[in-house]
Length: 445
Image (cartoon, rainbow, N blue to C red):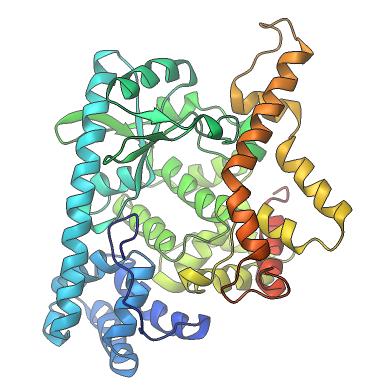
């Protein structure tokens, strides 16, 4: 069975992975994959520790863990680069090579489509910034197949969205109307049967921080890049690091697994000769994401060996609850993919003990403050006469879209099976971990 990124799940009957086992395998794996291994004693020691771990747990479990984290292509590359491939079982090496080739083919198809979109945007003088996987695949990783992607994310100015929409629909793309008004940082996803999903962003922060963020600064600092011969740009290294940290921590609460740690470490190592830590830290404060950034960097230092400035670690240590939050982040990171809970809002809803508490949670999700809704939608009351009916329509569309998108997951979580407790609810311990970390990350910092 294939994942969205093209890699395959391990066949039925594979050994069951729990948090403890996943951590014992992932820690040596991260040491090998967090950076291009140097040919010195440190690199040799990392490879040696990894091979010792393999000898204890077996290649089947290691490949399973790498695939779950979407790191199997990178593991394949690292084994060959370190000359450790001779120690790999033939079946495991074939599986890793197959994952790499599948990821490479899929990514080339995605990047080819994106390059065609970028070419048309260039003709119309529309500035585009590649985000996340697409940016990392063409700038940070030596081979675009080493960083699996499920879709492509691009950032454009809000006023350019209508023209970008025309370009995409002209290529056969369609957006799902039921997603309208839901996303805080991008318009509804563009879908094309047989083609990659495209997400067009107008900001890079989630809705809780959308009102304090100047997107234009990102375009002013953007770095020129080349995608299959087409001119484009990526975020400045400092901005990209902050975005990766915010996306992993505040947005996903580390639910996207250990690959996020590898991405952050690889990015900062790639630009280490010109990466300005002080500027990045100042911006993290301006954006209100210092907790996310400091926590991610602390994890990178602990598990990858990234050299993080002492003042960032000191700041994190001074924050109340930082140690507990670090433990919670590690628990989520090393939880097997299939065992992770959903979004914090969803977990909070399931964990609420009273009907009143659940109603309050739903009200906050469906009906955010008007200023936040205006930031998400670009709605300007003064330009539209400030009609209340227009504002009510915005709320109605958001509520309808959220319900259409999440009703299936809600019913499945409440009434489905699959190891859940008490009438279909997820483990309260797991929900408490996610909610506690989410609340800590979103406190003022």
